[in-house]
Image (cartoon, rainbow, N blue to C red; front, side, top):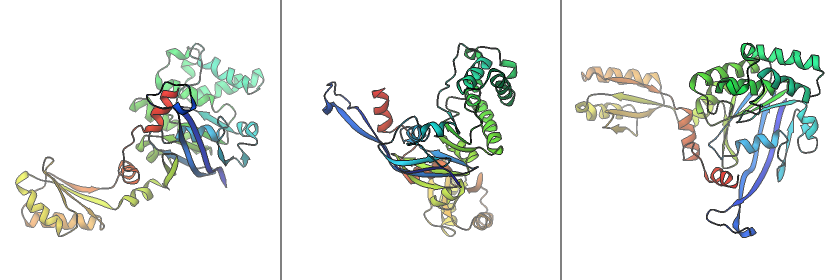
Length: 337
């Protein structure tokens, strides 16, 4: 069963053109944030939506969580039409955005009770739910402290806890680890994995390739408002090609190693600065064994040797032709804000 379905979503923004100060319509530029975007999320799975800043990730989340109406297209969450029945959709979803939505002057306990009361829980039920979430997210000891005293990781956890007040069937996390240090990111990954284990369907947006690799059952790569590829991390990596044989040797052996590798593969590349010879291989460890034997016969002792699988960084570069950097849409949207 599909928990989330988006079909041909289109969303345009009218933003100020760079260098124009006039208030006339001519000074505005139409930017298409979503360009016939379609995606689906199976019930009980994690879909990682991967893309650079400005690719359309946050706009997609805002549409699916009823915060923004698309110009055209359709969307369903839990079988409910997002556009026609937004109030019903809000009853079954949770949302944690890029920036914490909690009140920094209140304590963690006060914030969670407040959110529960806003969901029309009775006082006793609101208190019980707040205490359950504080314990679940290891925040009991900090419950009575103002949020402004929390670390970045703690703030993200309390914000995520607030999104779980109603025990959502579908959870949307928009770049949940942005701004966290490596330790905070690892802690958040642990929290997310525990939610997935409990059966929550999750749509996760990120620009961290490692994060998508770690958390997602499937990954949808978005660029310029479109899904340009979809599959598991391994499936996407296979689109780039196979593995690469990489050998590092002393500089005087580079040409000899190139000849050896050329007998095993094609498109041999020498990087003399790194003293590395590399080439794509389709036979995996067989190619590695052949290379080791040939090097031994030639009495060349490598400084380093191994097979490298393509990373999601390689995948993104191969699919989009550019790295995960800010594109024009994001720049113009920031200027508009």
